[in-house]
Length: 39
Image (cartoon, rainbow, N blue to C red):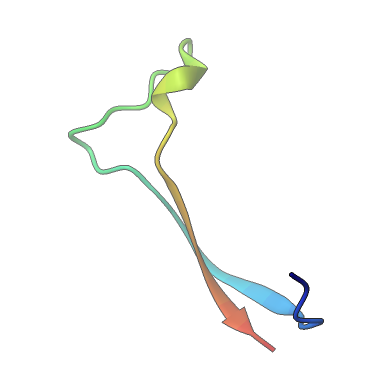
């Protein structure tokens, strides 16, 4: 599905501090969220 619209990234978020991201274990960076604005 393609809406033919541009979007702008407003904010990037990751998991809270109770789900730490370990630099040596990439699998711990599993919660990601983008806040987008349709242009």
